[in-house]
Length: 179
Image 1: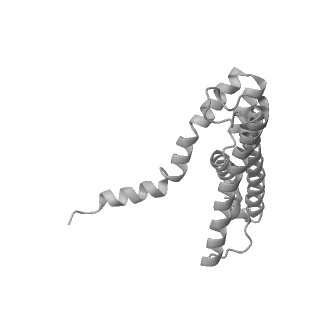
Image 2 (image 1 turned 60 degrees about the vertical axis):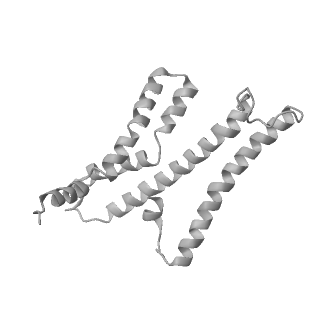
Image 3 (image 1 turned 180 degrees about the horizontal axis):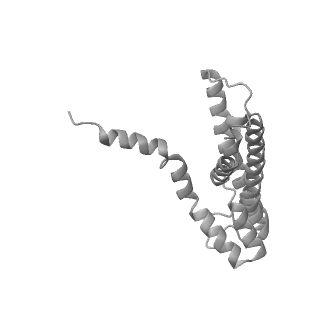
């Protein structure tokens, strides 16, 4: 969504798509390799060469530092990036909505609220509540996080699959006369 609302020029030629595909593929492989390598290196050094951290009886996340390296740091980085992209996208939507005429803006607040909720669901913003629940050791926040993250799939399904457009397509398909 960030790219949809922030791109000033859209170029969809094949060389750009190929370059972008390789860029995203490289990032999706290199970043996890860095994370796993950090865990392996730390485990190997701390055990004086006896263990690599994976495949032992004990969990490889046996220290707070390893939990930070393998779980907390990537989760924090992805959440931070998503929050930044979300805020920029909301700002761009808001900027476009301000340009509308006064006659069209009467329905804008409800529509924008719906868009913002859908965007926050897709970007995984509700994980922030889960992290806060763990950090604050709050059962109430934990329950709220469970509900929000559990219903995330349902919200995504409703937004992208079970919507008016898709229902009307199915409706027109079912109403066609048999040949």
